[in-house]
Every structure is written in C-alpha cells, then in structure tokens.
Image (tube, rainbow, N blue to C red; front, side, top):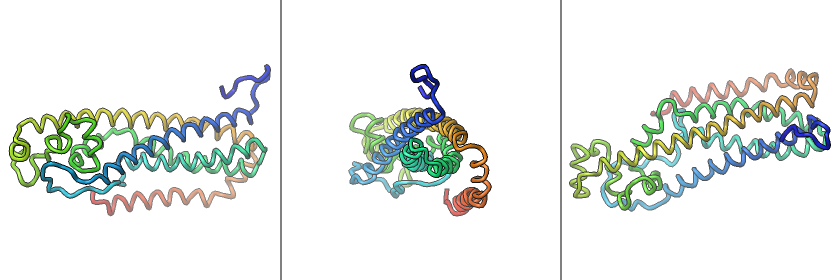
Length: 268
C-alpha cells in the first residue's frame, strides 16, 4: 500500500512517507485507546466504595504502582509516548505535503528521541519474569482489582469467597480457616486460584499483543525515519546531528538518574 503505483508511475519518497506517517498515526491511536481503557478500568474500580462482605485487614494499595517491574508502568508510559507521536505525525503531515524542510527535520528529531523509549517500553511488556502473576497474587483482594474479580470469579463470590487472603491473612491460620469463619464454606481457595489463573492467562495474552503492536510501530518508525532522512538529504541530516550532539546526552543522563532513583528509593 505504501509503495503502490499511481497511474503506472512508482510512488515517490514523499508519497511513501505520507502513507507511513498515516500508518504510524493509526498505530498510535490504537495504543492510546488501549492504555486509556486500561486506566479507566483501574480508576473506576479504585473509586468504587468498599462493598466487600467480609473483613479485610490489609491496607489498600495505590492506584498506580510506578516501578521497573510493573507492566502497568510500561503500558501507561507507552500510551504517553504514542500520544506525543500522534501529535507529531499530525503536524508532520502538513510539513510533508508542504515540502517544509524545517518541519521535516523537527519530525526526524521526534522520531530519534521516541524510538529508543519505544523500544524500552516494548521490551518491558514481555513478562519474562512473571511479574503479573506476583502482582495478581498480592493485589487480588484490593478494590482496584474489583472489576477483574467480577470478570473471573464465580458469580456472587467476587467480594467474599474470591478474596480469601494468602494463607488466611494475619488473623487466621490458613485459607480454609478464613473461609469457614468468614463465608461458612471450604471452597474459597479453589475459587480464588481458578480466577487468578484465568486472569494471569488473559493478562499475558493482552500484554504480549500490546508488545507485538509496539514492535510493529517501532518498525514503522524506523522505516519512516529512513525515508525521511532520504528526503531531507544526508548532508543536512549530518549537520543537524552534529549541532545537536549535546542534547543527545540528556536522554541517557535522565534515564540513568531515573533508574538509579527507582532502584534506590523504591520499597519493592
């Protein structure tokens, strides 16, 4: 589609760039919708009143846990990056059609800056360390997971049997004792484990699809950047890089500082 011929004539680099720019915008919109939908689910669950039918001595967790081990962090950050890229593609569309060299150079630098961040977030979405399973296990009884429990737990158990604490919590010896005392039953642990397994599988699929989508966008950004540099011409690109070398160092400096801060002060 990007290189199709018009009236028997091969598409020019500018036409190819316009179509690539459109594709980048489309991928950004899908990512923004997914990130926004995920945040709305978490936010609405967080605001719901605590209508649990049994006691839960654990304190509520924060709405968003921003750390290097949270796949939510990568999802939200990726959504923010894609929002910036979407704005850039909209502005670049006019620059490409109007043969605006200054606008094209600015778009090139946006791609240069966003591409490594996009790659970093994309890698983080592949849960090789089973972070989602650990978080699901320890956050399961929190109000922010109420929507998930409603989807995965058996009917009528989302706020009672399905929230049995790990090993019965601090007031009971184990899950069975908790279930007998709080719900007058013995199947709480089985209901919770089945629901958690279902959610872990669903989360793995969703995050993996999101990572693959981000990977495809990275490929589009790289191709777009290559075509854009061919249009701008190599001498102009080289002079622009030489004049902006000091600003290139800002990104790794900020990255090292941020990672160091998270590792030093994060309680997890």
